Image 1 (cartoon, each protein chain N blue to C red):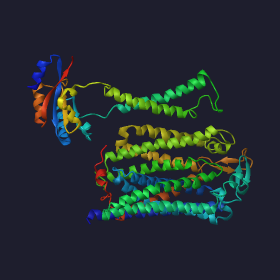
Image 2 (image 1 turned 180 degrees about the horizontal axis):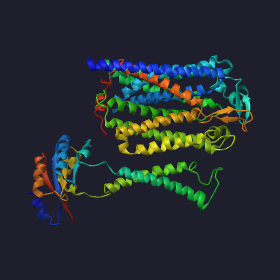
Image 3 (image 1 turned 45 degrees about the horizontal axis):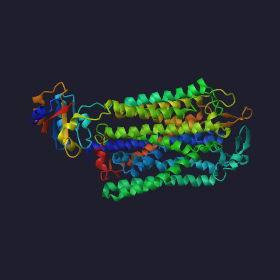
Length: 190
Length: 435
């Protein structure tokens, strides 16, 4: 009912997904397991507190951020080596403190400092990349009750993009899971 | 008592007897070695004995520090792991006993009293730069004589072991007593003991490493040395903890279902952290001496790299490379991967690897040294990688290992403590620990 009214008032909007709220961490944890078993792929949980094990319950694999960290670290190590070799041994050979032009020993602090720096960059930007950040808005913000997921409500949103999504079936599925105030979220695109 | 428990207890008793037998054999051979060394003026059995004891001592010190660190942080995840470490702390008095023969030789050895630590005997020959002199005439000893003398050394050794034994006695007592009365005051007391104990034990282990190992070549000095011993002790203690907890948590053993993946993962992360820390300390020590390039300090690394008389690479060069790549790079890269930390057998492989290389690291630190040789270009020869010290050392290592394992087994089976601290205020947090 509510969905059809907003459709009339705003012509330029598209359906984003269907939300259902839950009252406790336990409820959403169980519901998330059922959504995963049902085979949904494009869906998300919004909770006011971190819930241990929810990622695994949703069927998420481990984060890929460590790959970016490792790649960043390895890049940093060899960048440091390249800098020292190029500056001190190749472009302008210079004897400092009676040490060789290039050796892995005296400039090692440069190698590992750059390893740490680039690993940190890899971690931060890898996280941004994988989370598709930065983004300034999100369709779920259109949901009037969304603010309560920062307070005392737990919400599951199944997106229209999901291959299994079906207006009626998904809605009744969420209701069967015990979800309250099942709502269609619309994204305005004006 | 069920029949099965009875059988287990009997087999436990049997293992203890075997361990005690191993200790008697290993230490007996080691002691015969010491007597032989005294009579033939051979340093090898003494070096071997010191090497053997340094290994078990480092593990015990690492465990002591871990228990105290867990206590001061009042951390939630580890009481079930901490209890296993507290059993490990039972070894300190026995380790003190193991070091006693070396001290006695210093007092009673007469003209051979400086056989292991040259500086004990002022009449002993030593090397100053490239010439042979006696300890009492060596200016580097004269300046250090206020510290490096037998009387003060004895007082220090006694206080180190007083600190280690005292702390481990009290830490065990507060934890084990809580099993019976459940009084939270024991947890607070444990925290207070640890807060005072960490600096005390840190000083004891630092100066202990100076006295026992660094003073073998008393002309040499490094302020990093104590931290190096701490870092390797932490690595090996974590390795032993991981192995022990894994062993205790397989099917039908008491920690099955209690010690979980999350605990193992956290211990493995600590292991990774101390792998990096060890590398940082060891490299810093090398880096500073390499950069300063003062002969007084560099000779220590020179004899670990080349034959000082010919300038050719010696066997120690390959041991040094082995430490860099085998004791740091390989475990470091291996432990970076999540699955290597949560998979029991994979983790057991790498911590066993770490223990083996820890033994090599101690060997590399203790064994190489300058042997006076008339006619040699520089007046001395560096001891080679292989020698009778390795053989004597393996016996001492085995004997002391059996003695330590026996005392830990005795603590485990003495029924003075539950398998986990059941009345620790943090026990539920620890049981429900989650990644």
